Each structure stands twice: as structure tokens, then as C-alpha cells.
Image (tube, rainbow, N blue to C red; front, side):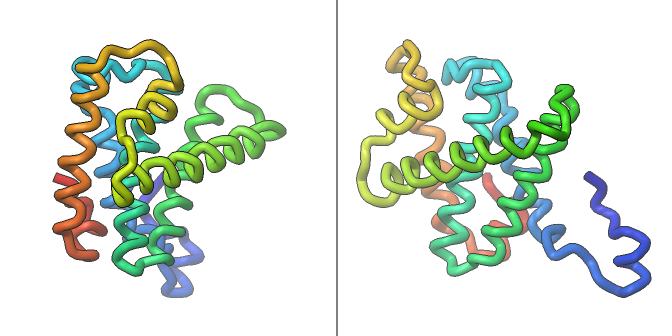
Length: 174
């Protein structure tokens, strides 16, 4: 995914508005790749586990954009996610015929997790239960690992709530 505008976009003087969200999306990816999630937090170091960790952090960014009254930015951030997942699937050898179906399932998973994490973060819900169901997919996990992930996500959520729209878009996830 090149950050450079296409020849036609340069010729017509237009740039992709999603590029303004690239720093935030890259920060989300960088955070989801942090080893502590997989070591101390016992998130499965698998394609599914990495997807679920990415979605947990992406959900927080999307909910925060929603709170900041930035619906278009939420759409663009989600489009970057879809573009990335499409590319990842193709790299794994998934053919054109079924890529759309896989992306559709990923979008459904994202929507469900946004709802679960929004409730856990903003409505006093049970974050541990949301993590067990969505991040660990109901598999066995020790309480220390869940507590680690919950603590780190709650700390990030507190930080996100202190960020301005511009700081968030710049990828300042801290």
C-alpha cells in the first residue's frame, strides 16, 4: 500500500483522503505487534490471534473517533483496515473468488468487537469477559494474562480519552 498518490491523482490534484488516517492506522498496527500481548498477555501468536489483537486496538481508536464526532475519519480508518486485510489475504494465497467473503467475515468480526469493547469501556461492562469471548475466543487462558491485557487496554483507553482529534489522527496512541 503505497502512500504516494497515483499518477491520475497527481495530475488532477487530488489525494486520497484516507492518507490522513495512515499515521493512526500504522500506530494501531505497531501497537498490535508489541510482544507483551503475546508473551505476558498470552494472546495466541497465530494469524487469528494477531487479527484479534489488531481489532481490539482498532476498536478503541474507532470508538474514540466516534466520541470526537469524526464519522468520516472512522470510515476512512475502516477502509484502510479493509484494504490491509484484503492485501494480507492475497499474500496468504487466498484467491479473488473468496477474498470478498473473508473480508466480509472480518468486517462482521470488527463490528461485533467494537460493540463488545465499547460496552466494556464506556458503559462499565466486563472487559475481562469481552476479552475472553473475543480475544481468546473462549479458549483457556490464565487470569494473569487477561488482567495484563485488560490493564494495558484500559490504560490506552484512558490515554485516548485525553487526546485531541488531531493528536489521535497523528497516531499518538502512547
